[in-house]
Amino acid sequence: MNKLEILGKYFGCDSFRSGQETLIDGILSGKDVLGILPTGGGKSLCYQLPALMLDGVTAVISPLISLMTDQRDTLSERGINAVCLNSAASLDDNAAAERALISGRAKIVYLSPERLENPRMLSVFSKIRLSLLAVDEAHCISQWGHDFRPAYLKIAEFAENLPKRPIIAAFTATATPAVRRDIFERLRLNDPVTVINSFARDNLFFEVKRQPNDAEKLLDTAGFLRRMGADKGSSGIIYCSSRERTETVSRSLSGMGFSCLPYHAGMSAEERQYSQNAFLSGQCPVIAATNAFGMGINKPDVRFVLHYNMPASPEAYYQEAGRAGRDGKSAVCRLLYSDSDSFIIRALIDETELDGETAAFVKNVRLKQLSAMENILRSGNCLQNEILRYFGENSSKRCGRCSVCDGRTQLRDCTVEAQKILSCVKRMGERFGISDTIAVLRGINSRFITENGFDRLSTYGIMSDSSDKEIREITLELIKQGYLKQSEDRSLHFTESTPNVLYARTRFLVRLPIQSSTAEQFTPADAVKELLSPPVQYDERLFARLKAVRDKVSSVCGLPAYAVMPDNALGEISSVKPTTADDLLKIKGVSPEHFRRCGERLLAEICAYIKEIS
Image (cartoon, rainbow, N blue to C red; front, side, top):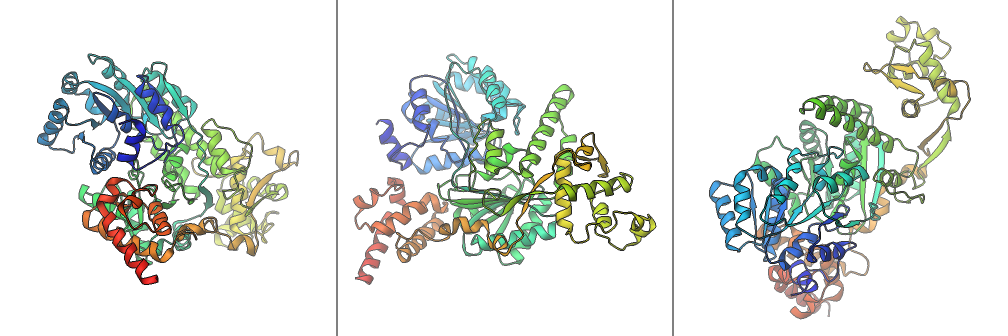
């Protein structure tokens, strides 16, 4: 079979996505390749399809056991023999996988980079023809990346110690120019065919919102989930910064009537598997998780990703946010953050387990990434453009799909307000933090104020007409723009640049929410209302019935609903109403494997429906 026949038979597609065919052709011509494709861009197909056409075996280096097993199981469902070699499998299972490789029964093997350090692996792979070595999540090879994995540094040496060096294909979704250079050099790629797709995700709506504490975050989250239809089955992920917070958020949302399960590394393997399966199958539409969840999880119909806390880097944020809308439909990426997030991340960075010069280098990189993340969140510019710029892609056109570009914020001249804040910080002796400064500016009557004599300051009550939130936003912007700084005890201090604003040598501009009823009524869900029900050209009644049939099959066979039949395909089926197997298989996205699982049941439901309405 040629590549298009394989694409249709095993992967249920009739065309390639951007960049896929170039990378596949490069591999089939015997060249190394480097593919930088955004999350949802179809990286796995770029090595899975050539694996079926090459004579030998394809080995896939993967960082997570859950990612390996998920891809292996998906391939097995498509009739492709794939195996895993990992520490979670028994000795007997690993031995059976090795035998399948040596005998030629398995075409693809997934393994971790650490396993290559075992001398036995060199012996096993010396007995087979390793045609292709695919390196998934290749950014893990770079200390400039957000998931540095030292074992990735051994991959090139392993490949060159084999009787014949295989083709090396490297893939990742998030890589800055520095990370791309590291991938090229450390994998020792030989004149690779390179595809770097745009990092822009035109179907994602990005929103950033500051919430000062967990109570307000939780209320905000519950309201957002209702607007997104999570109480009616719309699927989404909530990323939390800690295991404890994951449990708290999951428990609280469940108490509010949402179906939500936790997922984190502190749970048992059985508990994690249960949560993952319930989410993938659609039985539980929302999962609250740490960043341990999601890498490589192929659930296309995630309608929203909500970050409950600020991620530690733009790479982590974009990779996690990119798990929304992988089916190409619109989705919302909402990020809530508070002042404490940065301090917590900095504390974790200080606790790095690496030693010596490596630790110092990695710590410095992590701090730069955190600073970049902070700048993106507090930016007065288009959020999507700020993210793209970080990854080395420049765009001057406003996206129209983020909370900066949607008309709910405006750039305000806050020079006078900034001068009041700076003056108050000075009169308080540069010894107190944001909350205490706000209390003085608003004229709060408290024991703390009177005991320190702050009620006698000229700045006492000078901003009584402003809200806590507004003063806090302006103060944080002063810090971001370098006109104030915070010490380790979080007290505010002047900088060399402070006089420029204090004495009106420069204007101080801040992007703030528009305070109007129109702005308050707008929500990100307004940008994706069409997602919560099938498009108007679908027969919605039939769609609902077909979806019920599909979901029942999913529950019985223990497979994710999208693996039984994708929503996109169900929508077109409800519109076309095919009544024969041949017609059903002509529907885009319906593969022979999809038909085998539920095709006859769907056809029976369509015929019954047509009879009812005729």
